Length: 353
Figure 1 (tube, rainbow, N blue to C red):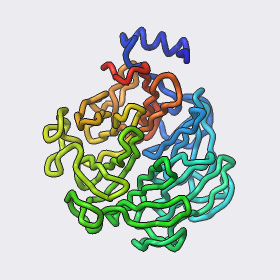
Figure 2 (cartoon, one colour):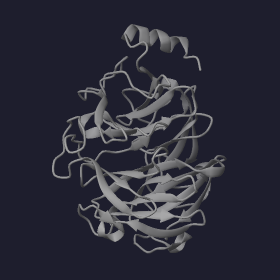
Figure 3 (cartoon, rainbow, N blue to C red):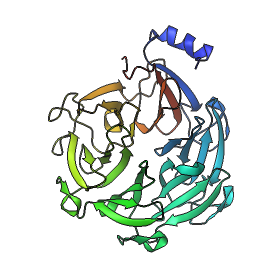
Figure 4 (cartoon, rainbow, N blue to C red):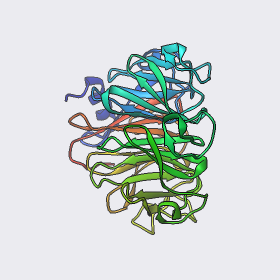
């Protein structure tokens, strides 16, 4: 796919041809808001929770209470909910209400799955804006069950495997919940808060936050707010091991297992088609890459001044998403809740920094 001329020129000026190319897709660098529009005419209020469809459109949460869409051309529209009003109402478009959205996942049949942590539920959103409640009773709890008979306590991250099973970070229950395509909810791993590798209920998490399915090795990977580590989970057995970082020490050190350090409470985690993981390490104003061997490197790092440029000085990279449907890898980063930036690489599987 050819890059737009302005993007090529921008990369030439930045001196990063044949490396990563950066551009702002939508939003303003100095203002949050809820205005639809194209490119910098739109305003965003986005923390985390982003997902691509097969056409390269990006869906994201806005102000915790709305789902918005941005096309590859940067056209921003609101799909469902109201950025200015929360609630717990199923409906269509602006008539629907969310409590506080955490994550957004594109599932099968062009349906978005949304973790509504404010209502302790999982909502389904069709691409015509129709919102229904799929899982969760609407009050906090930890009951397994089917559909709304199950309960969660602040569901945050969500991912899906090729068989159509979903995996949800149950934040204040410190557990990973598994959901079949029929909506049957069980507990895969975790119990009380802590830090311990193990199988099923013997494993311990502390505020398990975001989760991704890795298409290369078939494992699940999570971030935690209470432990500065990336955990690796066998989705068939529930075995949990520490993959990167050190539970007793946060930091920004690159390196292999046992050496690397990650900032406290890393937000989103995403995987590319080569099995590499990308973590929005917002404590360090950085995007970190972790390969299948557990080696951690820093892809981009800013000083926190939030200066927009060809090699941006990032401040707080909150959300992160990977679009692997094109001939180059698109890494999308939400910077400081105000704008969405795009980084591209050639289809080699390697980043140049």
